[in-house]
Image 1 (cartoon, rainbow, N blue to C red):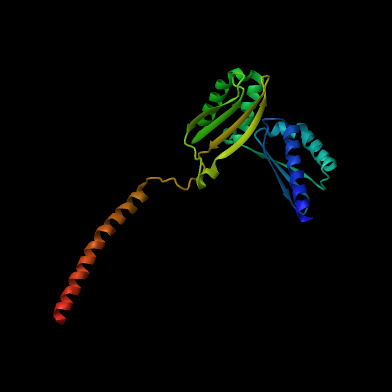
Image 2: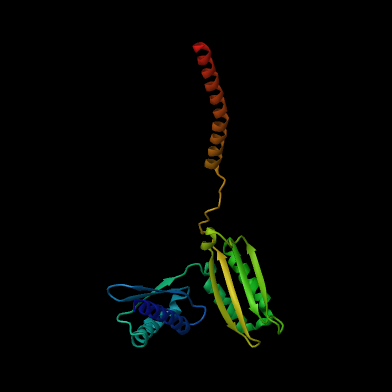
Length: 232
């Protein structure tokens, strides 16, 4: 019974996220987090356009709250807005932006759209970015196009700090899949080494210590030899 309840809860959460994204529109919402508190359900919507999401005098938020109560039977849903200050480093927003551009201008201009998004992200200060487009671009035969620049971790523990997202563009020739991976400038890389004065001083100390160790070992060996000779 507990397993069924957990599965149903996850299904409801997925449905709530999809409904909020669909209602507010593509390209406006990055992430939707759901937290359960003693007062009620706390829904955090991450967006770079809080004004459009809230609406005039909070009308959209009120409508959304009322629908969540009726449709998903939430007791006391409370919607909070988390504003994204740097949307260039959010993979979901950039993937949705590319999808909207493909739907608006058509898949024939996919290279221009991809390179513009790539340059926009890199100009903002990202360490690396990768954009993958898969679908009927530009011919009737589906294939995958890759656009990348900078440094991007693919495997290992450091790859977890890379922000990844997917989106879908519905064009006349067919559906185009979009995958975006962004490595933000403030991402903490465990294998990154910064060469500064402190590091250089530590290296010098290690070098001196490594040179002194054989000297000390030689002195000890000579002392032991002298002591043995005296004992004889």
